[in-house]
Amino acid sequence: MNITALLKNEEIHTSLSIVILFYIILCFTCVLLFFLLFPFYVYVNKVNRERDKTAIVFPITNHFYVIIKVIYILFFLSISWTVLMVIFANRNSPLCAIFFALILLTHLIIFIIVQTCTLLTSLLAIQRSAIYFFPSAEKTILAVQKKLHTNIWYLWVSVGFKDLFGIALLLYCLQSDKIETSCSSYQSFYLLTFAVFNFLLVFSAFLYIPIMIQVQKLSYLPSVQQSKPHKYILWQTVTILVLKSFFLPFIIVNQYFNPVSPIGVLFYFVITDTFILPLIIQVSYLGCNRRNLTTLLQSFHLETFVAVLLNMKMESTVTPQESLTFASGDSTRQ
Image (cartoon, rainbow, N blue to C red):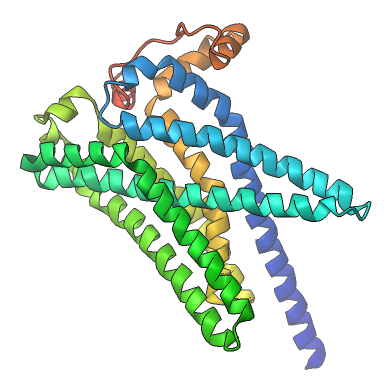
């Protein structure tokens, strides 16, 4: 009986190790794809910039463009500091602790960015859904969108303050006499905020289903005649749901074999979002501009490509499109 139980226990640990290994591989694959797609994402953004300025979703896509460049730098710094930490760890240097603190700070900033982008994605989809269900309120809704973009820093400050409050609450937990009660409050705080953010994301994705089924009903709206924002938002929401669904089974299986606390499960989801969100933003934009991307790859010239990336030459080598997301519709008709 004991031998059988031991064998089963070893099998469970082996299965768990395989699950964790696949999870880590998926995370690193997302990071690798992010770095590989980044130059193409920047290139297509630059050659389409003048055209994109006429699109209704340009304030958000341009904001995402800036964010992606910031995340790229942060990821690069995080990798560099990790390498330096390993080097100095072998020398027992106090610099190791400094690099570790820098890594934590970098990932905290990325986490704040991820949450803010999640909110922006949700709000954008909810806005388009509201125009679909209440077309007479289009002008009011667009005015709210403009107001949001003008004061978008309030959103960043709010999310940042939330996480600073969470860190303060954690420090209080560690010093409090009633540590179990305090840690329960800390878990509840983060679980609640995470649940709200992701509920908005999934809710906005499902709201968009009737829009895509009967999208032609929006054709008389000035904003839709000018551009095709539903294509971009569709790519954004679908990519989010698909990538999240890839990671979810690994988290569920890990929880089955090795149950952890709710905050431990939340940690898995936070790590997952940190790795997949930058990829989501790039894939959704490139997917909507796949005709431009295909043309670029078919007539690829390294000199022109590098020149555009470095702002040395801004002439596009691809055919301009009518609007930000109109290309995906065109490509299906050609």
